[in-house]
Image (cartoon, rainbow, N blue to C red; front, side):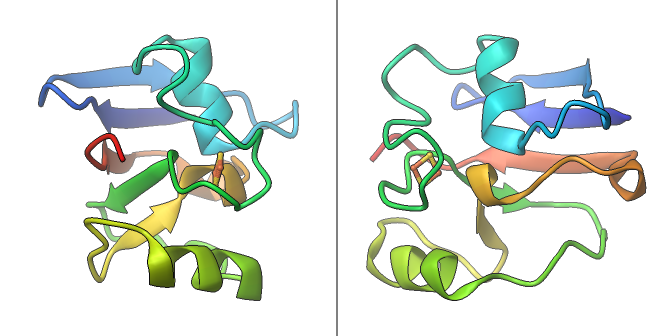
Length: 106
Ligand code: FES
């Protein structure tokens, strides 16, 4: 699927994200090196660091937040209504055209 990711410098990147590799959004950002090593995915995708926080800009129906994601976002910085943890969003075919912006480095 095509996903647009706006990096922390405000530059938009349209990338191809595989739906058959059980990849999550944080891993997609890392695989395209859209954020410097060590500034995203710090906890390895355990919903324990919020370094993968992003803002969902498109109107996609994403899976509901689980409790651990809610809990982490409740103590993270720069959280908005549309904040999600990228590591908790597994890429599925329904996400074609998704547009997200990386939250500032925390
Ligand atoms: Fe740590 Fe997502 S990578 S919360």
